[in-house]
Image (cartoon, rainbow, N blue to C red):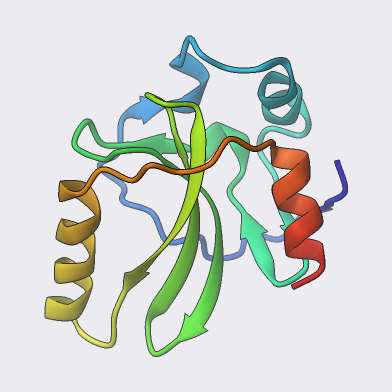
Length: 132
């Protein structure tokens, strides 16, 4: 996998209430386990994308996946790479917003819809994001 580990704590938008850790998932591939064990307290970057520190990857029970990486788009909007733990597939979505109602609407839309996603690997996403 091609990424740069960063020492400084950059802002990765998450919800402090999230309690379900990715480390507790039973469906982790060998590649995912390897990724999660490499410098688990440090974030990574690939291209313009920021990857959450493995020990901080958590979700709420109502969330349909784990927020793995993000890219700031401006005006409070972020693109997120999400791993759906139920299907073992990946997808991207835009969350956040210029104000609280926009952000809440985007979040509610995300948690209420089933995303099909695609079969992929962390390595493939990192390669793609390095081209970004």
